[in-house]
Image 1 (cartoon, rainbow, N blue to C red):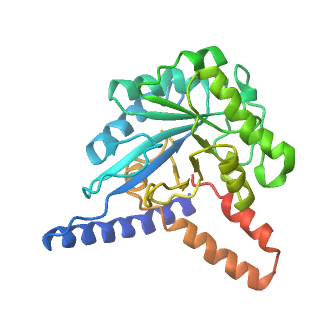
Image 2 (tube, helix red, strand yellow; image 1 turned 90 degrees about the horizontal axis):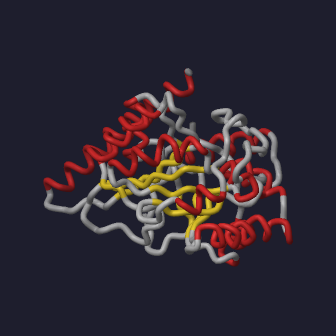
Length: 288
């Protein structure tokens, strides 16, 4: 709780700074840089559905919804937001997608192909415990309309990707994309990293597998570069405090990766470790 409150206070200060900079730019007749935040959800239970619906109303009041696969933001100085879901749980079909469709908000579902139609089977590594959640079936996935929903890969078995390589890594990346294309009968252009963990070799493996964009768990502004390949996301949940959700939506949690980097640098001075180990720890950080 203390850490959550501290993160909130620092993010509030950054949000105030952003607001001042935006107003000064407009007073000077300048158009601020367009900004986009990609939200990463996992589960939306029946009890959480009203809170999720309220969050989507807040999103519509404060940003323009766009697909997470959008190549480039319009240069109009607006705030944009994209909504994504990892793991493909049944409760997303039941509770989240209907609320999004009511509001014409696009969603991207990142699917673990070998868990379709079963309870999740991957290792729990922090965050909300969803081990009892049912994953949607392949038939359900195939019947989801493509008008407001895109489908991306979350690998075949949800492994910690930096721990595998070679043919196994290729199968998790390329194999999951191939299977999803067969199920949904359309292109699968994106992938999100299980546990948020990745390194340079994994990024290159994603390029080789034919993905056009991959998503991390680092809460950075998205689509800030033309034809961006690696895109950040901020973790969101229906249980977020209203002010917490507003700050995430504004991009005010983007200072966290810098804080992690500083913490690692200090720790490295006290206990040097290999570059590889440090890099993996960096990229697996998930924002609650």
